[in-house]
Length: 163
Ligand code: GDP
Ligand code: MG
Image 1 (cartoon, rainbow, N blue to C red):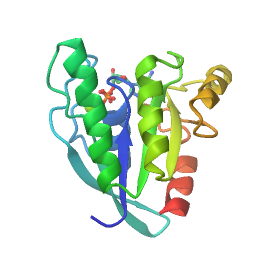
Image 2: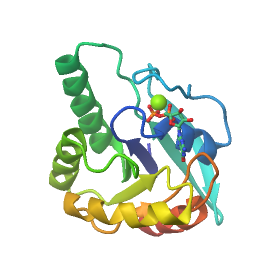
Image 3: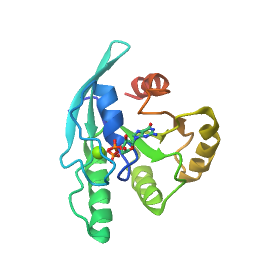
Image 4: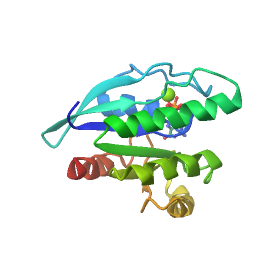
């Protein structure tokens, strides 16, 4: 698929919420329970006259912690094989987790354009927490709130430049 933007990240960071916002759909299931989105969801997004596809890579289906993390890695690798640009979501309120660091490592090795996105930045104070994510080695974290839409326009400006 040409011009494909993949949304990756560990469970519950808001991937499906962002996917739904970018594609104007309620297609992907958003849930407080980690592991709810069963399949990869594809949708379309248009920004500044550019149309591109978006994939929500949520397909984790198992509960055992080990298999769970392995499944996340697998999904990230699949995403890097098909995507042109990767949106790597982290939760600004959680700090850097081990799984974030693992995903970052896979993404750095892929050599793809990666945009690090600090989601759940619902208010201005939380922007200061985002600085911690520089340690992932993927550049400046872009602060957004997928829930309110704040910052998503700036994010899309960056996305279309990288496509
Ligand atoms: P996914 O597992 O990464 O697909 O995450 P979901 O999109 O299912 O969201 C997980 C939870 O985080 C849900 O309760 C969402 O409502 C919530 N959430 C998503 N984005 C935001 C945000 O920008 N701010 C806040 N406060 N909550 C969010
Ligand atoms: Mg999801």
